Length: 159
Image (cartoon, rainbow, N blue to C red):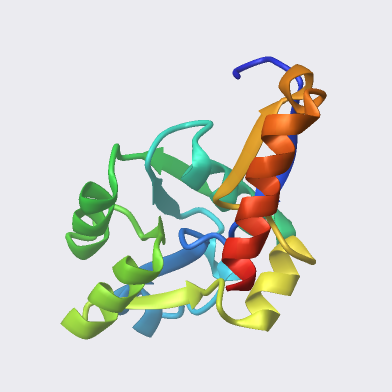
């Protein structure tokens, strides 16, 4: 569907599970306590122009840090965790399980959490479709199949 007009037909989450930022505990203890404190720092993401990059951009730009935070591509979530743990980057965009693991192991601290209303509203000011279904605009005009799919998804989510 790249580059083709599309329509969002069903949203499965309001707050994407990867919209969190964790930092190393030593950085937190030294004063890196909020997104605003990321100026001049490196934050791990999976890849440029990818989902974690987009979330990092939105979150840092919400506190007027455009261009002052380096979003460092690291490839995958495991590598991002390792980079924070080894202090190769100051933090990373993280999923809920990544946050839990870093906290449980005692080396990571979340400074932005999708599950906290104050954090979420500061950056996104409302819901953000994460995992969702979309279809090409041309296909959506063919009511039968798409309508049945949406009706089934709504029934399933109501259940």
